[in-house]
Length: 278
Image 1: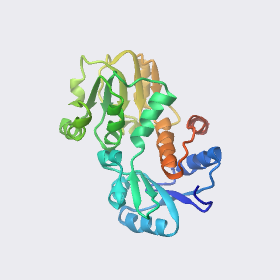
Image 2: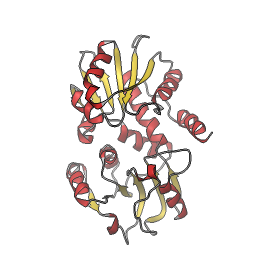
Image 3: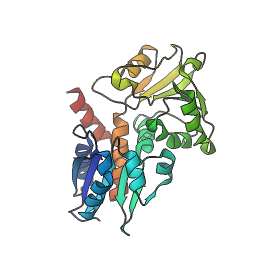
Image 4: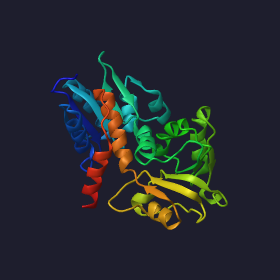
């Protein structure tokens, strides 16, 4: 077991809003681990020196948020396959030999939330993912590993979605289209990976997009349902969920990578939800 002085932190910019210290302190209490976890605001141009200083001073692991995930990918001595696929790193872990391993836990955090916490099926389902940015790239491998019947990426710029699909075609068939091409198609699970929710916007979606018993998931989260989830509920989705469980799930995977114990995410999600809704 790691000693009591083990230091962990989250790097990002901005960083004051980060829930990571709280989440990992709850994990540590639950699993009876003794750790210190802080947050640090780091500029992109200072990432390498800040990370090197952190590990030199005895740090054992880092979480990385936007816009530093590409910096972390470059900094790591080696990366996991899922981080290689994602092209970004959100977790750095000091290894016994002194090297630093880079991982990406975002996708497995989301899929675990969908399948374990929410109890929704992905296997053999028609899945639509909205968006083709870094957030979507980070979740494609874990989603494909669930064996969906169909996986379609819809994006405003089709060329960007096509480029993304080519990076994952060895894992399964990934189709792409523009939002205007979604007419007359229906899906069992729709995942919003665009940042539109943060601005209160919604991609142009047809009203009959959802199949019977469809579920909708937004990677963003907030105190109230996002505009995408409100849209889904109004069109008969039998289940809706935001990305709070994904946030906690990716943190749990990081914690497991660092400490070798897997925390129970459900009570932590509940505590965060209570805080959000006041």
